[in-house]
Length: 109
Length: 114
Image (cartoon, rainbow over all chains, first blue to last red; front, side, top):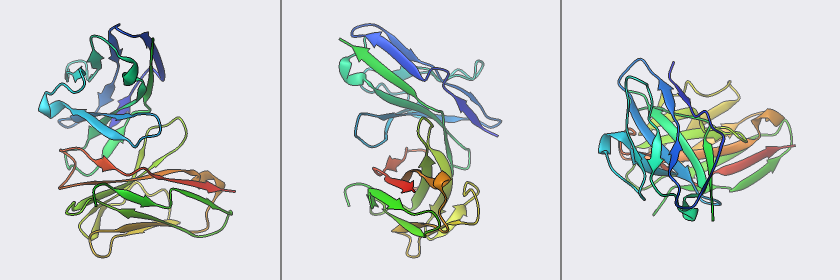
């Protein structure tokens, strides 16, 4: 069965510092991975997809199949990045997203 | 509509009662999903609709939970004989076809069973 692990429940950095939110997965097929974000009092929303190879709000994530990881990175954190971040894996059939438990990122001034 | 709409936003019910939670997806989105999120946890899959039919209902925890989408648009999640352990945030999401483009989530229904 597929599984997504986010080892850090809480992560705190200072503004301007680099940030990395870790995500590891286990899946027997070819994974499609996502990062979702939930800002305070807002709904869960898509941040980025690995298939798009995009950078959103300065965040990037690289799929490393050898390490089964999909860590989210940003070189210079901003206070407005403070939020809950969820890593998620989409089954090959496209029917089900499996989420990690989430990492609460706090960026201090 | 402009986004995924869920009603009610909050629901408090007594143990043993029946509840219905409603989801109105983005117009034209054929795929609809229900998730449940307990405090401190990530969302957990419940059921997935493609059009009117439940393509995958393997996440429903037991037969007290049931969901319908009779016209391929609005969906209702129904919970019979509610238990305190059913208390959670229930999230609905929709997508055009499958999930490769990412889901659009509603703001959820907070269910509290007392």
